[in-house]
Image (cartoon, rainbow, N blue to C red):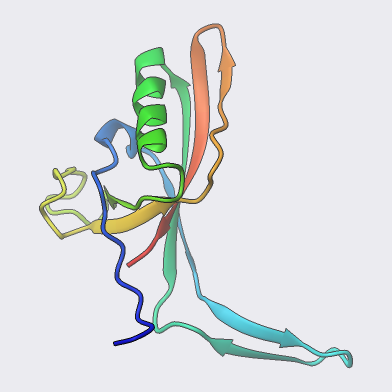
Length: 134
């Protein structure tokens, strides 16, 4: 169909030790208009909510930070999508499959295009946002 956009093709799976601690939130895509008299009009743009994961990793060793940064750079920030597993939804719970099992698997992208980290005396920390695509 002309004008259709193909679904994102994920490349790789977020490494398990990088997805061990996260906070999940849901957002509903809404189109809204605000009027001068203070009235507003809103309509829902999707059937379901869009999930988002916030991952804060502190006290990373050098090699862990290098794995994460390489993964980020290999995916060009938010450009190339990948799989991640929500360990609360996998069977058995808290397992982390290799990408072939669809249970608990999400196609996501990074929510930022710029790498930011904090470092002190060989220990580093980083915060990431993952956004559900499909």
